[in-house]
Length: 267
Length: 267
Image (cartoon, rainbow over all chains, first blue to last red; front, side, top):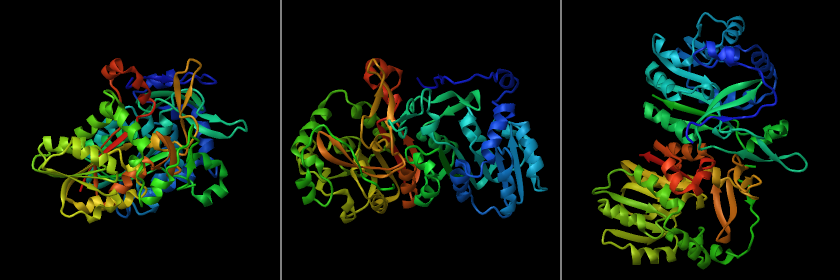
């Protein structure tokens, strides 16, 4: 059962085969439909990233003044720009997607930022050492998490910080069917959790079909960091507080299942 | 929503009020019906504890030769006896339940073992320091996990090991209704997960009604250890492998939801 592929039936079908076969690593963000769909939700004034994931990620960062920062899966470069504004001396943003980096260079360029097109599985090629490595919502697309974590360890200075977010394992385990059980009024009452213990690839629909994600249990994620040599310093599963629930009652369901998991670790 | 009490409807009702009101801390194991029910499943040749929890717990222990070991919630004392057989110099087993300790003293006594009746919330009273603190499937009954973890830290020597198991957070979050969704053939297809983000007390039925358990998220459990000063060394969510599934196909559902979480930490 370990490492099995659990396919999810999807309401529509768009073949990504051509894009993925050209790249050694998955590059869904260069798919036109995916890119436009993703861009639209990121532009939305209130979304789960802005309300929960980004504040949690920033809260875990060390003081960035004078630091060299590496951003894995930098996307539109908003975080890279933030790191410079927060005092970082030098920021390297890598991403596999040409389309994302084109936006990053246009909207978030700075003399202190270098954007490099590269899958994060190849970061061993990067020159120099970093004080801080950050990654926002990218690792659930990465099959070889162990390999990437080892390379991050190698790229960090002694005492350097590694801060990342990913989809919560209670989300990544999803392996088909409806995500929720609802009562007669349509309210979500249960997460339909399955295959949490069956780690590995999942295919799902997100704007387009065949988006591949990789599920790992909480224990596997933590042990991967520890085995690479990291010390775990903090874990965060962001939830709405009472104030947030008053303003955004639509996020009450996060109390059933948080969307995100964030970890701060130290070399 | 945080710390809310989510009551589970139960098929039968036995009032534990009298027992619990006499004790400052929950002492379900001294309830006659609970005790007999529990004893029966522990005697069963193949149960989830013996197949998954105990092997995982023992695998996390350091070399016990010459060590002073404290067992929190020692129950029947089987682990205390094991620690002596594995070379421990001195073992202290504490438990809140008189009935459990009576069995421990009868079946698992040894000159190197001291059994003490004490709720684990009061371990600050213990004299001396320990090299290893172990606890098996007891913390999910403890409301003040933070307080207990701090005292464990105080009782440990520098470099001492803290190894424990508890019910997996995917189990402790359960807050009423059926635990599973089944298909037409009766197979379990989904865990009905709810209120994972709503930490706090749960009342459930296990042999008797009103058994109180306390749900904490993965992140809360880990952060509690880190904030007390511990370094986390390993997390385990035990699962059946292929061999185990051939011998015990009834445990296939653990691939949907592991029963246990184990952590090894170091002072």
